[in-house]
Image (tube, rainbow over all chains, first blue to last red):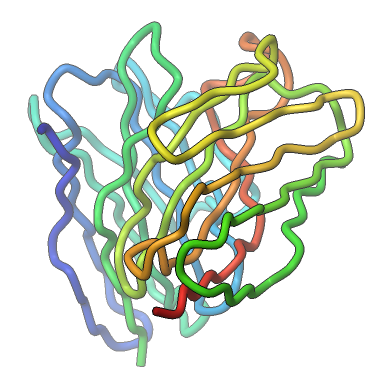
Length: 113
Length: 116
């Protein structure tokens, strides 16, 4: 069964460093999402992406964040200058056109020291 | 502002008992509601999606109901097994289809332990 994959599974970085989290959505899906879950808290929406542009973003998704679909398969989330409070599990999700179910990847645990 | 709440936060039942998990929301203007399962340190597995026009949805031992007017959804898991132990999250897509591109708003989850 097709699935969303994410790399790396765990990323440790120093405060102020840039990180890129990678996702490979399900191949025929056209809607992509990033969510994050700080330990012990709810899963929060960050951004949605369709047709090579951001379609919606939350207040969390400030100028430090960016997303990109650099080729036909990858979808990336970049954090330019990481802060301690960016430590969280980051989930990528995708869905097909004319369908509502979102399929989530296994997540990348980001630890900012 | 839409709020999504799941009570209780944790639940322990003996194997074979039916599970009833609750999700409540404050604004009835929702497009659909999805139930997920989350295992420790893992991603989210979609269990059921119920559209705003539906009253319930079933898949195997799982049944989800939706009552928009009272702001509630319930996930029933029949004849629970130890393998059902996980955290169950509900997430709704707020508003009408044209209001959003599908962002989900999550509850905090109910952690379930099924004891043998």
